[in-house]
Amino acid sequence: MRKIIHLILAIIIPAMLSAQWEYIYSPPISYLLNNAKFFSEDTGVLLADNGFVEITHDGGLSWFTIEPPFQTAEMQDFFMFDTETYIAQSYFSNLMVTFTGGTFWDYASVDFTVPDATDFLNLELGFSGTFGIENSNFGKAIFKMEGIGPYAPAEQVYFTDVPGFFDHILCLNEQVVLATFELSDNNPIFPNYTGILLRSEDQGNTWDQMLQLPQDKQFQKLDVSLDGNCIYAQAGDGMVYYSTDEGLSWEEQEMPDYLLTLDLLTLESAYGVIVTSGFGSFVDTFNLAYTNDAWQTWSSQYKVPFPVYIMERYNKVQMVSETTGYWACNNELFKTTNGGFVSVPEIPVTGLPDLKIMPNPASSHIKIEIPNGIHQGNVVVYNNLGAKVFGHNVGNTDDFLNINTSTWPAGLYQVSILSKRGKVASGKVVINNPDK
Image (tube, rainbow, N blue to C red; front, side, top):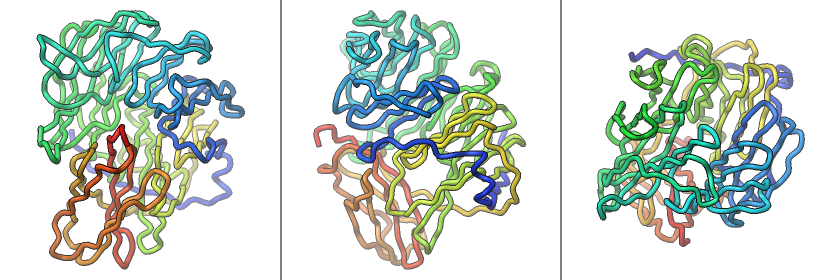
């Protein structure tokens, strides 16, 4: 069911913000966040590059660093079962487990390597999407873990030799598990990806495809609402798909343009982070917005301006209860203890069109589609430290721009097109060059 969205953001009075969302912490300047994840109102973890892991047990008042499984790992995901038992997932490395609070790490399983996505229901049941082999064919697989290591056995329960990768897995309960897989069109130079959603109701023994996104659109998030009554999948086509029957049937809902991330509280209410453009000022804004009318109208609860040449590494909002929530934005962490709600006047919002960048993720080359109406502009690319790594002028005869990225280090890059009036389009691309 597709609905029309009326997007409205609020003018914020600074004095009204202090009691709603407050800045509480930033990791050291040499680290850039990959994930901020909270397991309760008081307990959470911050993950960053170079093996950075910090944990809080007092709601962010204090943080302590634990020894990572790999000193140079780009930490991706983290699962905490008690004060001493953790599982850590990092890019381009194996799933690691510790029973000693991080003083010693070992492999969670030797049956699979370098997982794309992982989720655990508890210590006794987890699933991981990764590289697999079946009948001498290489491809992607889902492994089921019953109990965790070190060296715990894992069973391959799903296999496909279609090119692509898993980006989300969700263990809903003891029987139902969902996974999103991004299908590649197998273009050897500029592959595009289209997301599908898979579901199993027998602990992974059989799988059914429940959703397929429009061509070249990928899933951005797969999660459960705070009240536990709804599964939702945020997609890159400006849509959210939701289910209230454990994923058996799905409806669709149109979302605001330029919505970076979504945290669904109920079928009526949600938080989201929306980007608005400063145009000629060269300063854009992250708007932490709230809706409580079935996602039809959104009001801004907090605003964070950022220069166009500074690329946000990570942006996520997570409410862990009706009153307590956390927002990681631009390497800073904000918190609310009263729901973050504030009544404010509303105004229309304008945003920036997204650049089409192919492939994404990429390795050796990217191809950027120049939007219609760009007569003169400059394509610039910034790395995750905000340093400019590429610049090129485009004119009214250019439809595409090809860029050689084979020497770029692995990471997230911000791509913008600048004209004399300011930034007119932007996008992000992930470069996977693990050897650089």
